[in-house]
Length: 93
Image 1 (cartoon, rainbow, N blue to C red):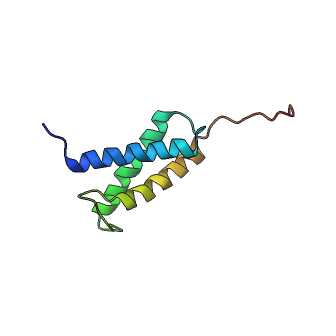
Image 2: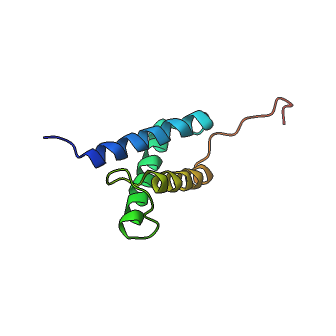
């Protein structure tokens, strides 16, 4: 059984978005959490595109620009909700 090309593109998009997020914010938290947020962002982006709002450019059945914008928004919200552990100052306070 072959995987759908659209599914493969969506998975690659989520993995790439996760890696970029981890590079930009290395102390972000657990990798699984970042990956889950990226997958949620791609899924919400495709739902938004499928509803007819903001569909924009597509690559096959995937809408990468819209998906990346939604992934960035979801990652931002995730960063606000679950933040990395606080660092202690070297001053002792």
